[in-house]
Image (cartoon, rainbow, N blue to C red; front, side):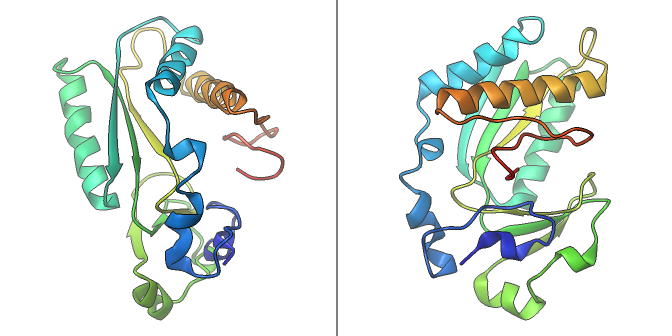
Length: 193
């Protein structure tokens, strides 16, 4: 199965080796991105410190988290961060199969019918955030930074470029060459986001 086939805009996983959707976790289980050790987590923290002022960063490895539960957790952590109760925090997790609709979503980019989503256990979730249509699933590491951008990181575009730089550095640690595309936000390896 080609998992880009679930989103018409290419926001999802690339082709898997499995012929069965539910076999995806088995095809990627050996991936280095699923077996990140503390050295790799430290690399992320070091890369983040290299592009901005050094601050404590708490990294939480959460495993598989339902998308809605993850949003609720983020809302609570944002509240705590704003109140100064927790340091900057990075959540690293995976989601069960879900297609998310951002505020800029185009329905024609959801390429799986409601019936097929139900049969395959794929949730459809309106995020209330920016973006189009994105697939998330087991085997795809997702990072959610919960950060105070004051006083030195208030330029959102600069912050996004810094995040891209961190991701490019982490990809290099795995021997992959990542890069940006002019006028777009994100990191690509070849033509894959």
